[in-house]
Image 1 (cartoon, rainbow, N blue to C red):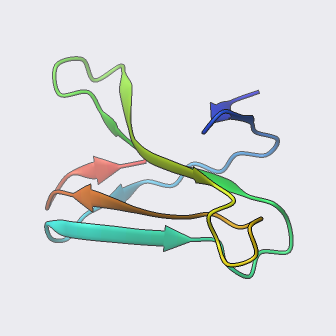
Image 2 (image 1 turned 45 degrees about the vertical axis):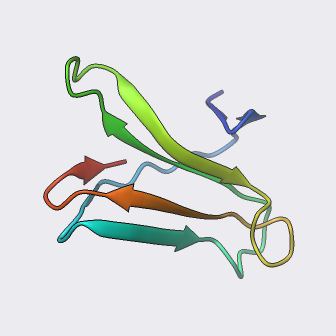
Length: 80
């Protein structure tokens, strides 16, 4: 029932990623055998109970069913 990029999800998988350095994180699901949607979040700096959307994508991958996005990350920051 999660809504990501305006799409109701069907089988979400949450992954925690801590950036080893500041820069741009590139993610994609190219090659997936099913339609995907993807988003990256971080905790709100003033209220850790709130997740802030950094970027999301639906159908930006190679075959227009996969997802692809880029997001700026900070060294040591946790992203979801």
